[in-house]
Image 1: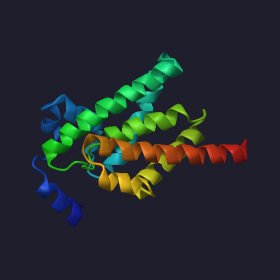
Image 2 (image 1 turned 90 degrees about the vertical axis):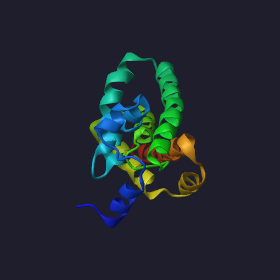
Image 3 (image 1 turned 135 degrees about the vertical axis):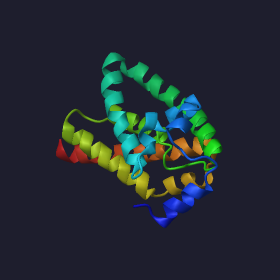
Image 4 (image 1 turned 45 degrees about the vertical axis):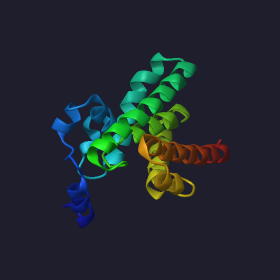
Length: 173
């Protein structure tokens, strides 16, 4: 069931996001998280989940320094692809644009201790801060535009999640 906000949002878009739209430009496919952003409900959550298999595949094959370089590259590419897709849709930070969640969650996973419970906590904390947008995340989400604005607020949510995990870890260990 779609809400009136979702229906209104869909009517205001220049283009309806679907598989054809994603195939029309590589930036759209990447910014929509290889299709995960097409999920009808909670696309940001589905996009965040894409980060897990990506991390499990990429991280063991790279040194820590190389992984950080890949994250910097992914962030920079994200500024570009999210900007292109936002312009094409006519909405800068459309919910289906999930590359920002993927890159931010990759960062969180990089600093997450081993264990499924830490990974679950990392996921929950990141989604919590990404959805809630406490200050200053909400400020940047509202005032920074284009691809950088799309990417940056999720980077801050990742930082909040990592700070909470560090605090929890210091108490438990």
